[in-house]
Image 1 (tube, protein in one colour):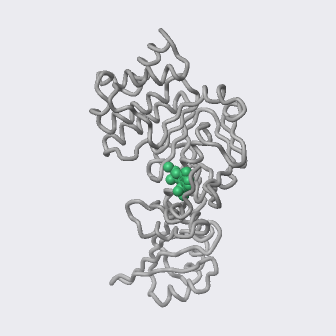
Image 2 (image 1 turned 180 degrees about the horizontal axis):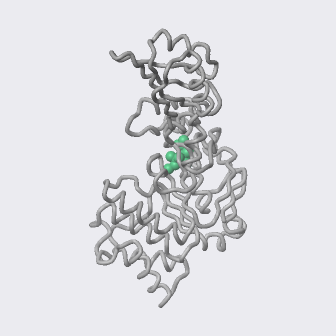
Image 3 (image 1 turned 180 degrees about the vertical axis):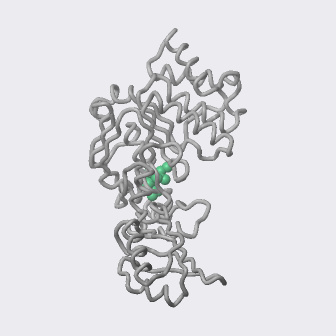
Length: 342
Ligand code: ADP
Ligand code: MG
């Protein structure tokens, strides 16, 4: 449905998108996940033909976005990061303008406008001034215009940014609904968002694709590196002695309770979480010490992101100290010093 091959975008000496290649298949909701400045918007702007690439190729349903832009763009609906809404127009006037620009006329234009207004639940608001609409409703107008022309692929750049929690839930529901009929690609810097909406996640950091998988598989992939937590009926020094002999372990923290039981968090050195659990089980049974609990710790997508980007992104340590927004802009300083107009 969409193929991106060796896509690169340079601004002067700065590489915003670095040799990205991936394939998007029909009928799923895909998420571009990455910190601010990762290159998500740049990639989306190139995919939709709004920006030229330095190198590489984008095909939409088989049509090259540069060589056959009309055919390619007819299959695309795009909500840019800052949709160009005209504040002193009504949604009706704005949608008519966009529909005409997409080549719709007459009855077809009107019936599509009515359909997208219903789909985005704008009915009743279509004759208000856009300026008077809430941010959530403005976003619906932006999504409605993307749906005009009945595109197979809908690309939404940070569709929930700036919305309040209720608006976010409504827009996410709308996106899920769109995903039942169309291929949807959205970008987000919020883990929980892609986790709840998307079936496939592309993690982008510093313009590079660092992972492409389902949220579940990404979690599994990194389970091993996060270890196991257990409770043992043994004294601290006995546990230390056992753990020191296991080379599948890279470190541990222990708390011993008054009843003589210890709770221990173990980090795996390598391999699968199940290998670590097995080693712990046998090591403790050899010493005739009971393990009362043995729980592999599941990595969240957040852990996965930190893991993947730590090696790639200088400054990603910011992520570990940010509890609210772990993706807060590791690349910000870089972008400022390299801002060259396109
Ligand atoms: P994201 O959408 O993931 O936050 P962007 O695609 O907007 O990231 O930006 C990627 C990088 O490219 C950033 O470092 C940004 O500052 C830089 N960049 C984007 N547009 C320009 C431009 N016109 N000139 C110079 N640098 C740019
Ligand atoms: Mg962006």
